[in-house]
Each structure stands twice: as C-alpha cells, then as structure tokens.
Amino acid sequence: MKGSLFGPGTIVLGGGAVLLILVLLIGFFLPTEWSVSAEVRIEVSSDELMPYLDSPEGWARWTAWPDSGLTRSGPGRGAGASISWQDQELGAGSFTIGEVAETSVLYDVEVDGAANTLMITNGEIDLEPLGSATLMRWTESGDLGRNPLMGFWGLTMERAQARELQKSLDQLAELVVRSDSVPIR
Image (cartoon, rainbow, N blue to C red):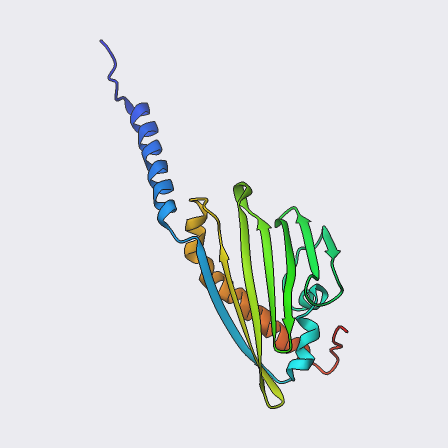
C-alpha cells in the first residue's frame, strides 16, 4: 500500500511554511516609521538645561547608554559632538548632535539592528522659557528599515519609546533641580 502524498509530516511542514510566508507578507505592510513626543516642566532656566543637552556627556547623566565600548569623537559640545558604541547587548550605534540653538537641540541616532538593519532615529528637543522655569518638549521619529519582521516591533515602538522619553525627562528634571547637582560645563 502506497503512502499518501499528504501525510502528517507534509501537512505540518506545509502549514508551517504557509504560516511563515503569511507572517512575512503581513510584515511588509506594517508601518516602518514611528514618531513620539514627551514633555516636562523643569524649574530652571533653559540656559541651565543646555549643558545637559549639548554634549554626549550631558546626555549620559540622564538617559540610558551602553555600559561599555564607548568611543567619543568630534568637538566637546555642540554640532558634531558624537559618541559611538559597540555593545554586546545593544549592538553597534552612534549618537551625534546635529545642531544646537539657544532653545533647541537636534540629534541623530543610528543603530545596526537585527539582521543588519540600520535603524535611524532623528530627535529634537525644544525649550520654551516660562519665567524661571522651562517647558521641555522632546520629539523623536525613526525608520525601522524594510525588514518585514521589524514591522511587528513597529507596532509597539511608539508606546515603548514614549515611556522611555518620559522616564528620561523625569530623571533630568530630578537631576537639575537637586541643589547638589553640578552641571557639566
């Protein structure tokens, strides 16, 4: 007696292949771009905030950074100040300040992601003076690349990144209002 062409193994493998193709196909239609914002009112002037924003060392005091493999380049502060990393957990990447004005900072982050996908994040911080306080608005946007599996990550990226921005802003607010905090100059 001959075995059937569609035995249990063939059905399982064929079903798995169809499922994988379906997941990849859906991934091609998911968003690859994202954008988030967060803000905080900080009880210091925008001039007092700028040392935390115009250099990688300033950012390292209130945002998450890799623990190892850091390489500093460019000027000490302002446009072109950069830090790159090669971290076992986070991969390779770089943070570069693009432009610094009196009340704003623009920057770019590039990360070599999964499957050699380059993820690019563009960020902007705007400072709005409010008398002796400052309203700080932080906006980030990015592109996860054309990897269909990254589209699934993109579904949660905005919510997750908004939480991270707000957490960092809260850390900055706490840092700059402490009387023992010494800004980086």
